[in-house]
Image (tube, rainbow, N blue to C red):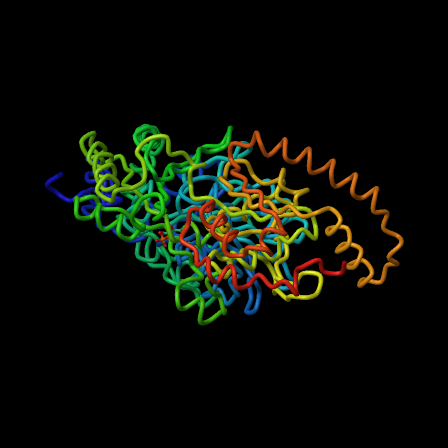
Length: 585
Ligand SMILES: Cc1ncc(COP(=O)(O)O)c(C=O)c1O
């Protein structure tokens, strides 16, 4: 075990920075001055933006950006719950209402479709956060913003080096905000930058960043003689100092070299952890540059043998410091209290929030430090008695239970049994049992478009979903499923179907039994053949009549198949013949 503590996010400051700070201290001018101007212009050049305005933090940058755009009380700004609280606090301080929407669990970035769905007449802007340095889907976000006339303010606190396949981060949105906080890829202790191509905003940004005093007021004590200033707005104290800029100027010169080093460390981690029962961060898309700010693993208790907090504590006891990015914003009491957010609002963000852990990733790390992290992660997992050390891939995560079958075959009954036995159903909307759907279990709306949107699946792990047989083929292939497939006599299915149609106002003789039976039988034959060759799906066929005859015996079969502890007695008790047996026939 290593002797000294490996601090998470230690900065790498060189002799050049030290010399520059000393030079500034000796210059007689340590506040906002010429070195800030040098840093601003070097930053604008690096990013390729027309203007860069240095400020005291990224939080300040975000706040100023909203003000310069003209955000007013009651406006809504959409952002992600998978961010630091500063993003959301800046919205609150600008007087606006933060509207959170869920993330893509693969990229950890805001899901563009969710942005679009959250837009109201009050929406004025969106703040995409390039999580960990992975660029957001900016093409889609820009299209949405354009369609709805929204301002895009990028939170690029992690993303100084990032690029989408089309453009450098810092040149895409209307305003982009960077952070130079101590743990960031460029460090000035505290500091931030706004980049923009909007020349008409620059004066105003500088003015409100410094008390609202007119431009270059910082020069009022300089060797050009005292100058009067005028206050044009009730501004803020958000300026950067020359001491901070002294660090930034040299940090920026090494930014690309440092990125190369973090790419190496990242690859070492990926290789070392490939066989371990943890999830490693997904690779960026082709053409993207990922700023490699955070290396976040996912610790799932079922696979890793301990939960994330225990895992973090165990690493801490081995002298390895880690971070958590982030506990989803809406789970913090302030936002829950003020905006009514609750657990369950953003399942993808919550899934990540409960499991994510950031390992040290920085150029100040020695080869030994890297090895120490790798060794400690392996040791902690071994000590936890976690399931396996080999062959564990993403697909080996715990399964999703799927209840399927032809319509009217009793899937609702089995869902009810599973719930009684302790397997939580995942269902959307309010479940109301009625004659057509006695368990009240509807297919997830999302399952219906599983092909194009697979984001819901993470929240289904360990739970049960009802999926009609025609949609089984659209389930995302990168998960494991245990499918309980209902069989029922075709005669009963058709009778039940006919009764349902009649209840809904159709005439009974409109249903051509023979034609429908032929169709259903053909579908079943094809589906069975397909299910046989699906590695990701285990299937248990159960017969509706058998469940009604022997509820306890069939409950045992289901619980053995799912291999999770279930209350079989309770399962059997909910099998209600009156509700399900040959209804309508
Ligand atoms: C995503 C994100 N946004 C905003 C901030 C705020 O940055 P600063 O500390 O420079 O105000 C941070 C800093 O940790 C961050 O990680």
